[in-house]
Image (cartoon, rainbow, N blue to C red; front, side, top):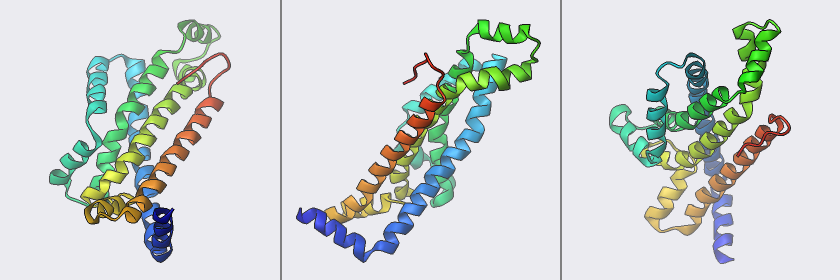
Length: 216
């Protein structure tokens, strides 16, 4: 109880810092997810529809999924320096693999009979992509976005090591100073944010899933 009171006291005395860290954390995470989506979703669709370089791209993406968040951030520092932009680019790279893979799987997994039926009624390939493949693939795409969002929010904590700011600053400072209240000021909001975003994307994924289809 005393630790919780100390944490609340720290927040009261440093409310501006806590709010600024929260805004920076959300901004960094959202920007990285958006940047990764702009690249990964069209790339996943292109891979699924063209069938070119599929094996190479998926293998590279799978390798990317195994690289730890801190390793990606550490690699960004000597190449790009420190600050918001290097953190943004590193977190975007972290978010690309799950979005790319899920988008590809979602489009490839559309039932062939459904595609044939769409062609049978005279739809062009572009119309089939927009009106048939995309709606049926959306639940899988959102599953990838859900995974990437949680990874990015968690990775943004580590971005404090390269000047990314956010809640990670309180965690790193708390560890360095052995100050548990300061550490909790960063850890608790970051955890709540990750859980809330996961629940949000899970709800969106559920609403876009046709009846009779289940996604993880």
